[in-house]
Length: 144
Image (cartoon, rainbow, N blue to C red):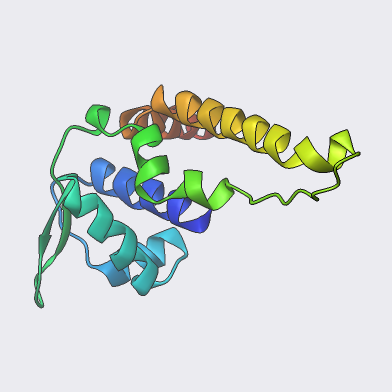
């Protein structure tokens, strides 16, 4: 998984848990063990989809704008370009007598497309709300 995918999930989950507050990119970066520049990049994408409200200035920051149930991880996967990051370019040789050299690129590209689609389908079934619930369950186990 790419860093942007993890950072956007972390930030949106954190904002969902603390839905009554606004956080700066510096605060989110500290919490996500990331860099404020990366946080601003991914949160700009989140803002473009209406997931967060952004206020600039000294008292500004990010605040969750939608129900966490409506933010699927599959949509975030595509939003940050994780599907494109995973896509590799294979090269074939133009050897007229070699079946493998002529077609291995096409075969691997097809396999890779299926693998990426499987990941998208898997993440599409999960939302930020699901992440919050899993965190709460883990917290309950620790407290017992």
